[in-house]
Image 1 (cartoon, rainbow, N blue to C red):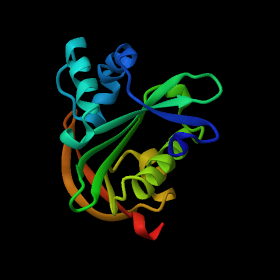
Image 2 (image 1 turned 135 degrees about the horizontal axis):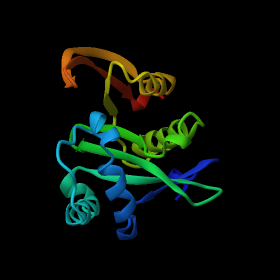
Image 3 (image 1 turned 180 degrees about the vertical axis):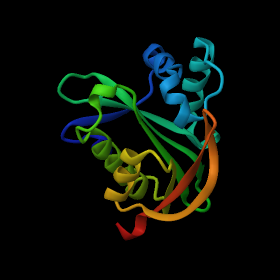
Image 4 (image 1 turned 90 degrees about the vertical axis):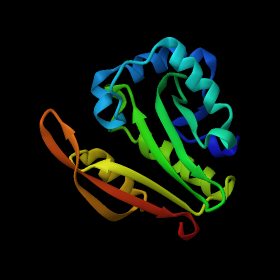
Length: 176
């Protein structure tokens, strides 16, 4: 699994044993702002989600767990969704669920592993992502990995009465 091994992190498929961690992460209201979640997930919902991830070609959706290599601790997820194999594109999203693990380069390494996998194994042509304009850490992450800002949706989201722009990014995988 060369695509999923980095220096500090490993990406691995979601397992049924991840249900408890995913339940906690998906129901953390601090994460709802970026995930657009409006109602809590039940454990049954989480198990259905895990099952859906096992049918990547059918669902067009795939989740990997980000694991610290030295401690085997699960710290977040990286998702591919809206995958279109005919046209060769997917949307990518990343969550470092553990606040204390942010800012240590784990997200960058995980995203680079995902980019390599999408380009070399899935043979996708483009990746895209959408980031809230006030999420400076994510904007920095995607720009650092050569995602190009391709547009802004003005006042796209509302959070606690404040309108927030959404920035669209694209990475042409055949150029990296």
